[in-house]
Length: 121
Image (cartoon, rainbow, N blue to C red; front, top):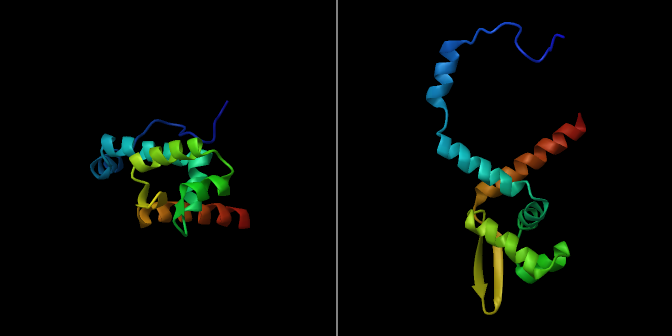
């Protein structure tokens, strides 16, 4: 049975392969990237990140908004904090969270734009 999605003969283009090898990121960087995308793959963490796209929120706000327990939200925030995707600041007894930097926001907005673009086709 012929598979239209694979090459019919084995003939790698070695010049192209070598060029990609030279430009390729390190295994360590690939591993870090995979770990970051694992964080994005959890629905609760993604909901937290999306909630923080336009404003900072305290833990209580996130719990009310997402209808989750403080324990659940705090656990997810700790994972996001450890991976430097979110940052926090304390104001009295309140802890406010926001996205670490514009890179996190860009990743999410680009993914959303891609999804919306696909829906329009």
